[in-house]
Length: 458
Image (cartoon, rainbow, N blue to C red; front, top):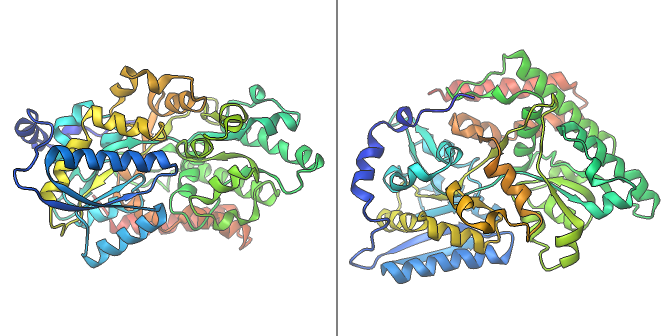
């Protein structure tokens, strides 16, 4: 895939900004000031402790104050949307997965350009971190950094290996191709039910119309696996008129809806939010799940049998045509809404947070659920490639050491709006609940996608 040129993205702004800031990683203010800071709660207590520590350490070193609040994922999303709509905003918002919110608001000029913050670190960042942090602004008519990237995440399969064995199957016999993984593991359901696990399902498939992120993420991976990677290209153009893309979307919707109709997916999956599949997996409601980050495994780290032995983490290997599958990787970090009263402290804190040592300590303290936006950290610190936690190395191999892609919102803010409307989940629901033909459901989603992209052109 063609990469967006960093020169074309940011022009000469980076050089000028970098020259003024490289000598000092962050600047402590002479007079203490306070910034209001919202951040998402982690899926494990260690993440929250790590976020509190970086805030407290910054306040101690800088003399500035952070009035910080940690909120559940959905609550932070809702509160952020409300704040950006009303204009009553905090000084800084830190989101792990801002892809349904940030691109559109950067386009609408509701977010502060943070190019000057990112500039000293740009050469160290992964290409996907850069691309996932730059968005086009229709007011300035240019692409700039609107998020200070700290963390990235990929999406592996989470599998109860003990249940696979109990069903008479073997982990080492799971096929390498995408559809093959689902097809093989769905065979666990019948034998497990025959052995008394009458309520178990094979697949935790986020075929949801609620979202916000998991269903969209699942569909993107199905699309890539079926050869539809170029539905959106680096020029920001949507290619719903490409027969190859349409065929990939049809195959994806057909496969997912067939899994649901076959009864190997919990029926309530149509209304799952982003935490419901995690909870169901932990309760052994189903054998396997495909979900972002290692939150699934790390939430059970106190259960040594489950964490170190029973659960298995598997990275997707090949697309359905047998070629290597690229991992789609996001970027999370801090962004500053327009109207913030203390932009200076917000930027200063993110300059502090983006230092490699601070970034690494924070993400390690969070037990590696997210990996650093600076890949050299992974190469230099043996923690990241250790096998001490069985789930970590497959995850790092997928998201850092293997081939990757950015989220599609890196190419156009219209994609963020498309996913915010849950077009892919709705296409699945049209087939399952509305008895619509798969091709017609895909064409309906494509039509709406084209309408969105017609309004947002770069």
